[in-house]
Image 1 (cartoon, rainbow, N blue to C red):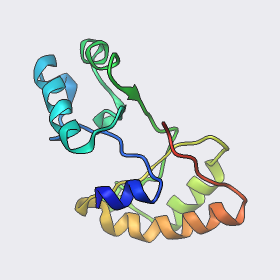
Image 2: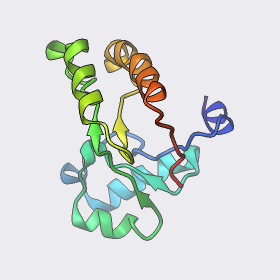
Image 3: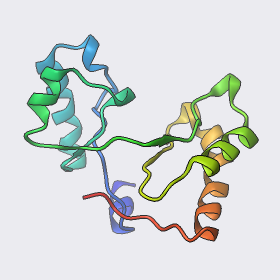
Image 4: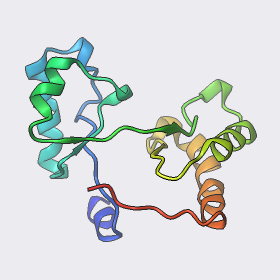
Length: 135
């Protein structure tokens, strides 16, 4: 899957190996978890889980990684409160050129993502948006 992702021109972004929170984890342990993920991913891009990181972990990792954050979340993690129509209306209303839109690719949120992402991609295409690989 990783090979296919890169062959199709997409970027891989490290997100830690264990999806741990830097505020609950000693800096050395957090950095080791990031490095463990990078053994598989081999990327210079990093997005901390929950979009937050301690200053000490940031200082340790920023020397090696380019940090990537999102500017707009899809809302696909709403679970009980997820409403496809409302989420679609919100992200299409709020999308702007240059946005990095957060979607999740995990079993826990697969149903919501699959309901929302195809229509959003069609909407983006119809509006003339295109994607660029972050490097």
